[in-house]
Length: 383
Image (cartoon, rainbow, N blue to C red; front, side):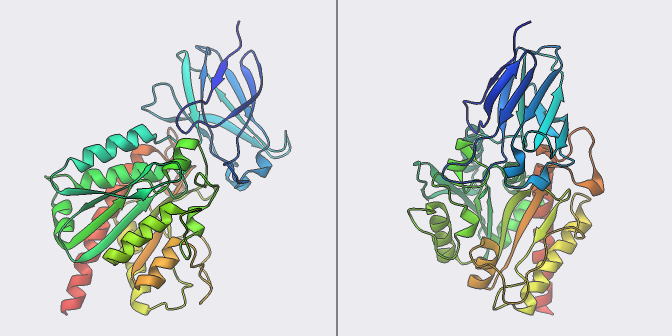
């Protein structure tokens, strides 16, 4: 039998082949350019039809979040449409920390990834489809260091300014699957939720805030090796043109409600992170944030409020992070939505774990919760 073949020379591809012996391969993940971050992988295996393959990704104790590998199963697809999970085993003591993936393809091709990829081609298809809707205005907010457009889709005639943005960290591809679901609802002519949101709000949607990192197969940074979600206090054209362009557009419109969409490597649940540590925290801001979380938890079993990040102490919020910066800058309700690379354990799915489909549905559910939140806020203002 011939050795299997492994390739990652495509959009968002990332793997280094150390050795191949028949159906067993030793692999390593390439670091983000000019950065020590690495965790995202995406590669194709060929020549393995009906053969049990073993893929050992090594050196993972030095990855960005080594605590994320325990209990994690790699994503796998044979048609690049349906993404299931392959049995995976984490061993901290082998090869500097290794993840061993075992799988038996039914066909000659199989793709493996840290999460189901959202390619730049799919991104452009999404932007083109949404921009063609009669209710949508397209804006290019600027360009990246690699010369890619920073796409923004805008809709609605209301006074409330809503900003939704995703993939500051490009390896968190579930964030753009979320965007696809949210945008499909917002542009659905038959949806009363969409009509009411467009009547009440002006929505500004940035489906991918880091196209360079996405295409390069980075986990967390842009083409310069910059973590964009640590640039919101002082973004620069040289290091973070993406943040500078988005923040400038926010300054033009103002912000009343903002959601920054992400993925989390370690926590097996969907959760929100807020802005409790900002210097100018107002009671009504915090109440608005907590109420949105309550509404979303009531709406879907794919969200919970028990697990999440530690809350920052008063006055200690990091204003270089977008959620804190926007809450401080505009006095708005802002939040970071985190989805898991593993599964949402309170409503687990053994076949797919967290998936593109659940990310899309969560995007729709978040828009429903936003409408409820707005209606409650209007009722409170009148009473």
